[in-house]
Length: 437
Ligand SMILES: Cc1ncc(COP(=O)(O)O)c(C=O)c1O
Image 1 (cartoon, rainbow, N blue to C red):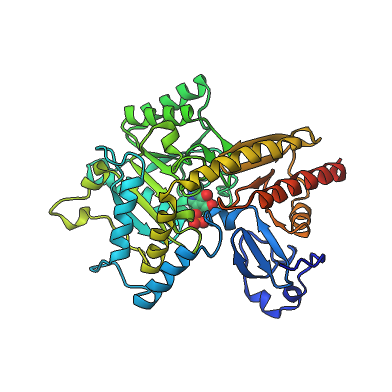
Image 2: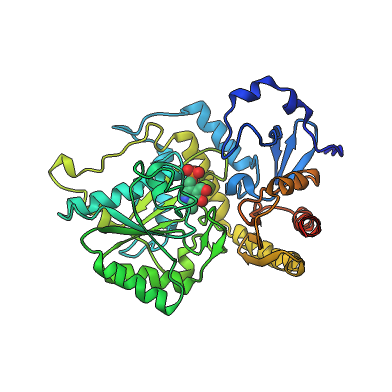
């Protein structure tokens, strides 16, 4: 692995085709040009200029087994030869049948009457959230409560970028003001952690039984809305409140699922089983887009009748794509020997110890760790672009946003690679502190 010292990616700067590529969350007029990735391997990304960057964020939290894992790549190659895609309307196929069954066996509540046994596939996390919201609304419609169409969600929440998903994001993150009139208006409240907040939350649910379809939450970790953590007790209390007031409880485990918080799913730590759960991101081990919305028997059975109009009216074209399902099946296989959760434990210990020095840096408000997630929170969000560039100069791929610098590395990351990531965070945050002084 050659590692020239120059941080610039001259190839990208010269490439006139870049103007055609509209990039995510990017002010195309002012933001720095992107680096060009040409290859991935293990926990690293190779750039066109020959440098290898250690990936601290697993390509937006997907590559839990690292990149190009041979089990996943092999399964995809085989599936590609047999059948890359076939529609799911009127047809089924082995990869989807296998994956739905395996998920039903590992999702929270498996083996109990509350199990999430019915799996609806889609191609991205945002769509899985749209599906969950539609499922909840149509559930109530089918039950004769057509007025129950609104959702309760929380400040700092992030559930995706499509309109329904945006409506249950934090108002600022979801740009509710900008999209007023274009997205549904939901009920956004503080995530209830104190006794008083919980009492207010209970009042809200009690009074909302005519209009509220469900509550949606990212269990234990609110990710893109600021990497905020809450306790399993808080999560359990919210779930319990929903149950007592007959309001559907929707868990969005798109970011937390598949080991990231220390258990296979975050809900396990609170010993709760949601009515509906969304998964995505690491479902395929980061190889290809796929997501799913899982429902329990109570939800599923409300769609069964002799009347065609009570059927669930949704069907993405690439739903349960066989290539993605093959990748997901291979990824689940890699979790089966249990080593991944041990790796998460080791990462958690290392992050706790190695990020601790950040706590004493002036300008740092908090350092927190949960599973394979390490967060350094700045008192004020300053110089984000400088931070991003500085990390890349040090050959690590770390993308701070808002007021947080965070690490969510692949679980297979080597101890030395992890030390390089945490070392870069400590070094750069010290530089940042002096710079912004
Ligand atoms: C909790 C959560 N839900 C939904 C999404 C949206 O997923 P996607 O980007 O695949 O649409 C994300 C993405 O970051 C997420 O973190």
